[in-house]
Length: 157
Image (cartoon, rainbow, N blue to C red; front, side):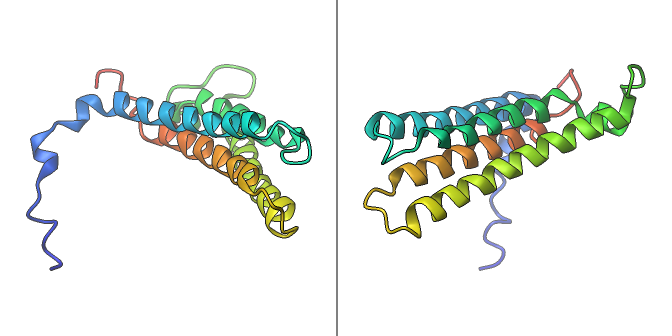
């Protein structure tokens, strides 16, 4: 039973190397879109302030800013391969990436706090807005990771 997946050779049928950047970009875009779609759905379905506090949208905005910050720095700039000019150089690129990841993790943790502290612990009748805030931030977070680490830096692939 352990060797059942060894007989499947799907990677030989399709050459993923040439399409890796396109697949990663589309997957990240779908994740990002899905996150915002979920929270827009919750905001339309529960427009009142008592069901969905409008300040909870700040987590999604911070996650979006983190998504942009993480992907504004290439891997070559972080490694020091292609970025030696500018006022901060490689250190500035690493600090920028670190702040982006801190914002992304912070918004994901804050969305968990909103879900459990604002809805689950208080035995709220309507829990979907809290779930929507969490899934919005989770999808944006994983979309940023797919876009950052799923692509290659080689422009010729």
